[in-house]
Image 1: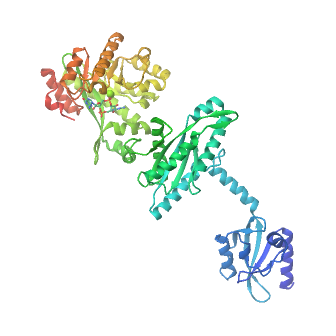
Image 2: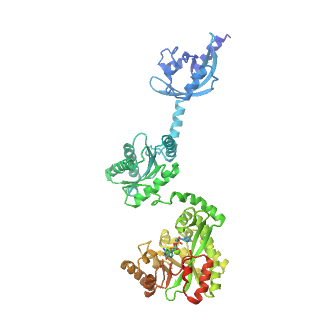
Image 3: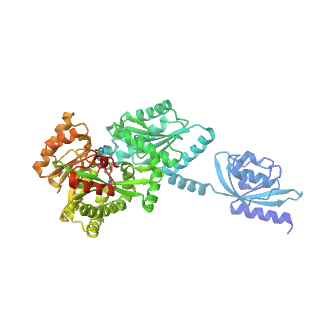
Amino acid sequence: MTSRAAHHELQHFMEEAGDVVFRLAPTGQLVFASQRAIALLACGRELRGQPLVDHVADLDQPGFRLAVEAAQGAPEAGRIALRLKTPEHEVWHELRLSRFHADNGEAQLLIVGRDLTAQRATEDRLRHMATHDALTELPNRLLLSDRIRMVIAQARRSGQGFSVATVGLDGFKKVNDGLGHPIGDAVLSIAAARLRKTLRDSDTLARVGGDEFVAVLPGTCTEAQIKLVTGRLIATLQSPFEVDGHTIYVGASVGVAVYPQHAEDEVQLVALADAAMSRAKQTGKARCVVYNAAHNGPPEHDISLEAAMFQAVREGEFLLHYQPIVSGQNREIQGFETLMRWKHPTLGMVPPVRFIPIAENNGLINLLGAWALKAACVQLKQFEEVAKRSLYMSVNISPRQFRNDKFLDVLDDALAFSGVTGEQLVLEITEGTLMIDPVHAEAILSKMTERRARIAIDDFGTGYSSLAYLKRFPISVLKIDRTFIRDLPASQKDGAICNAVLDLAKHLGLSVVAEGVETEEQLQFLEQRGCQYIQGYLTGKPMPAHVALAALKESTYAKVVPSELRQAH
Ligand code: C2E
Ligand code: MG
Ligand code: MG
C-alpha cells in the first residue's frame, strides 16, 4: 500500500470511530479536516485553509499554545485538552498529536480529537458540588479558603488590604424550629441571594455553616469602607422575608477582620471575624463589630502561648502558689487556696486568666488540674506538720475537669497518695459548672461528698440568677466574689449584697469566704457581720510554699501574717 492509500485508510477508520481529525501546517493553518470536524466546527463548510485559531475558544489555553508549537516543529506533547468553538457553543476535546509528513514533504501535525464535553461536564459538576453549598449554590468553606488565599496573594502584590466579614443571621434558629426546615431553607436561599446582590462581582460570598455566611471584600479596608459594605449587608437582611404566606423577620450580626492588621492567613482571618461576630451578637445583634484583640477571644499572642504550654508542661514551668484563708474572728490561717502559676522563661509570670481558658479549651486542664490537686494535697500534709494543727486546702476545679469521667479517680488518687482525708479538701467550682448539666453534676457531687470533700461555689454572685441550686446540690461553702468586696464599705449596694449572702448562708448552714479583701475597713465590715473566712491581699497574697511555711510558723505566735509576707507574690 502506498503512503497515500494508507493515509486514506487511516482517515476512513477515524471517521468511522467518530473522531475529529485535522492536519495543521507549520503556519497554524488547517490543511485537512475530517467530515466530523467540518460538521462540528463549521456546520459543513470547508475548513481547509482556515487558521486553527479561528476555532479555539480561549487563546490563553495551554493546549492551544502546545498545538501551535508542535505544528511549528517543537516536540509534540502527545495529548492535550482543548476547548474549541463551534458556531453554537464550546466543546472540550482531548487531542492526540503526532507528526505527519505530507506528500509535499511538509512536516504537519496530525490531530485526532475525541469529544470530552460530557466527561468535562460531569467533572465540573462534581467539582462544583465539592466546592459549593447545595442549598444556596454559594462557595463553601473549601472554596472560601482558596479564594482568601488568592486575595491574600493579590493583596501582597498590590499592598492593598482587604476584609473578611462573617455574617450570622439573628434569630434563624427560631424560624427553623418554629416553622420547619423547608421554610428555614427558603429563608437561607433568599438571604444568600440578597447578600450576594449587595456585593461586587469581585467579592466572594460563601456559606460556611447553618446560618453563617462569609464575605471576602478585596480593597475594603478602611473603617468608612467597612461601615458602608457591612451596613448594606445588615440592611438587606432587615427587610421581612415572605415565605409561604409567612412574614418572617431575621436580622444579621457581622464581624470583620482586616488583612494584614489582624491576621495574615486565611484560617486566622475567618476565626477572628467569627470572634468579632460573636461579640456583635453578645452586644445587641443587628450590628457590625470589627475585630479588636482587647475584646475578642484570646489575643493573637495567645495563639503562640498555646503552643508554648505543651512545652511548658514538659519543662515543668507550672508551679503552685498558696493563698492563706484566715479566720474572720481571729485572723488565724485556716487553710489555703491553691492557685496555679506559669513561669514562662521569657514572658515571666503568665497569669491564670490567660492560660487557664486555653488549657480548658484544648483539654490540657485535665492534666494540669490532676497534678495541682495531688501536689496541693501533698503540700497540705507538710503545712500541717509545720503548723502542728489541722488545716484545709481549697483547689479550683474547672468545668472540663468536673465533667471528665476520670475526675473521681484523680481525686481518689490524690487523697490516697498524700494521706489527706476528704474533709480537709474543698473543691471550688463555679455556678456555671453546675448548670452545664445539672443531672450529671448532681451525680458527681454526691460522689465527692461520699468522699467527704466539701464543695465551694467560687465567685459566688457572678454566675447564675436562680439560687434554687443551693437547695438541690450538696454545697458547703460560698466564696463571695471580690467584685462585691472591692467597694466596701462605701458602696451601700455591695454592702447589702454581702449582708444578704451572709444571711442566706447562715440559714442554709453554709460557710462564707470573702474573696479579695484588701483593706482593714473591708475586713472590719466583714468581721462585724460574722463572715467566717477571709481571703485577700490584706491577710496574704498567693505565695510559694516555702513562704507559706514561714507564715504558718509565725502565725503560731502572732496569729496574723507578718506584713513582709503579705507582699510575697
Ligand atoms: P479564683 O479561684 O477566684 O482565685 C482568686 C483570685 O483572686 C486569684 O487570682 C487571686 O490571686 C486573686 N486575689 C486574691 N486576693 C485578692 C485581692 O485581695 N485582690 C485582688 N485584686 N485579687 C485577689 P489568680 O491567682 O490570678 O487566679 C485567677 C483565677 O484563675 C482563679 O480565680 C481561678 O478561677 C483560676 N485558677 C487559678 N489556679 C487554678 C487552678 O489550679 N485550676 C483551675 N481550674 N483554675 C485556676
Ligand atoms: Mg478559686
Ligand atoms: Mg474566686
